[in-house]
Length: 411
Ligand code: 8DG
Ligand code: MN
Ligand code: MN
Image 1 (tube, rainbow, N blue to C red):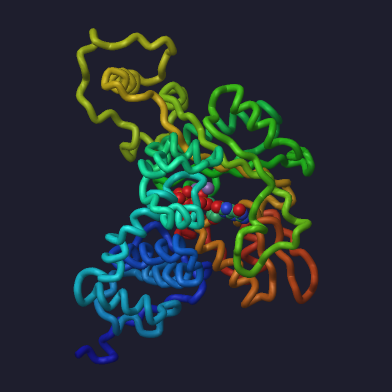
Image 2 (tube, rainbow, N blue to C red):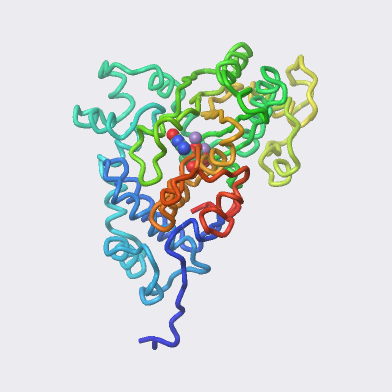
């Protein structure tokens, strides 16, 4: 028995938006199990349970060292009975039996495979499973009608289920930048989502586009999309009004007149040629993401490449790929959002994530400040006014929160 005085007591604020969460995680074994249960709940459309597991995982991730006993968890927020049971199981037995059996279950495995298709959500996957479709082969044989997104998702399944590297995100940034300045000089583009938070890989690449003169951004998305299309960069695209309002999100929903962002869900064709064309930022080379791992081949066997490349090594890399019979491009999911400059700070904050951080910001605004936060605006329900902001820092200040930089929003 450890006496009370010897027990390390961690102190963690309740809301994830009050904490600095870097990519560091001293409790990955615990948080992996909770994340799996969260994912399973989300895929089963039990959103409440999903959020509870996500919040619990985020608290453990915020701890400065590994948890070794249940007593250390005393006083920590967001740890419900169910999460505590999972943690206890892991601390005592090395693994969570619930997480393990979920992972092995046919239903979870099928949900994972099917929702791994771009354009397939939990509802569709559930319907298919009830019809006996558990995998891609069965889906293809079933003769199910697939929409355009799902067809593209199935066609590029392997590529889209492979993480996007920071180096590839940089190449795509360069392409989107070219598109944006070509169709509207002066327009600005910002990397958002996980890569803005400093992640080294992601499931897609997200961009926010604006123009410093209010109103000039109107009609920009179709032009950017046409440019990308004409250059052969798009394998798939669907431009829509922001669907934020239709999503079943928590507090802080904006009124309908504020929902004006256009967004484009797309699948890019990223070629070796573009990879070579882009000047790599130092970090990409330093961390070894783009170094050639194979030994130098016989120079006489090299295929002549028409375009002059900046780096010999990469030319070799391309040749080796060609010789090995691999395709010279990959499909990458890219999200584009256009916002007017007046809403830019809100859009930037709202689209940088993480998803839990965003949810917690809105919950904080609603429950602790009687305000409604969206990716468009911040409304003070008591004063009945919109609070203006031109930077993320100002929004945090309005909310009475310490500023948390993007790299510390990895909850
Ligand atoms: P990942 O791609 O590396 O897996 O992680 P991520 O970049 O954090 O996730 P994401 O799914 O690409 O989402 C990026 C941010 O965009 C995240 O904070 C959630 C936010 N977001 C959507 N859809 C919508 C939406 O319809 N409206 C608003 N306001 N935000 C959204 O994903
Ligand atoms: Mn993303
Ligand atoms: Mn995205």
